[in-house]
Amino acid sequence: MPILRSLIYYPVFYGVSSLLVMASVLALPFGSDRLRAVVRRWALWHRWCLRNIVGIEIVVEGERPKGPALYAIKHESFFEAIDAPVFLEAPAVFAKRELFSIPGWGRSAIRYGLIPVARDEGARALRQMVTKARERLDEGRPLVIFPEGTRVQHGQGPKLQSGFAGLYKLLRVPVVPVSVDSGPLYHRLWKRSGRITYRIGETIPPGLPRAEAEARVHAAINALNAGA
Image (cartoon, helix red, strand yellow):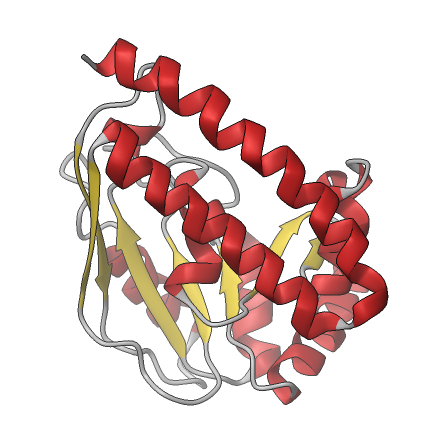
């Protein structure tokens, strides 16, 4: 059954996705609101395909706080990156700079307000990220970071990347840690039916010592990670 569901899912989801990528490019001259609507429609389409084709239910435990915040989210698969515009309202996601070179998608991502991460440029890159992040916060948009730096297999909990501590210190906004257990169902060729859970942890205030902030984020984002 997982094989059959996946064989239907891939052409249906990605076929329509290619049309929505083109729609995002066509939406560029009409302002950011129109572009964000297209991106959200893509994320909603993804959820529809998971629910109705793959058989994946998505649940959220906990409440999203009001006001500006940096959401630190566990990253086990592409699920949480695609789903971000549904999970949050017009999130500004920190994303690898290499992704912005993808034809069509890259230009739309810049206009949407994603924030490029250049890991090899040190302090200069951090200052640029902070500037862009403050602009997004001024627009009333939540920030999203995957603090472990890349996708991590379910059951593993590596140390947070150093860039998280720099952003936490300089942005001075609350951090909302979010655990998600998408890996076992989604991060595989033949996707499985079941339930993916978001668990929103206790909000971490700004101004804590680095070690304490990192320890609290690490524990919270791994709350659904049985093997961590």
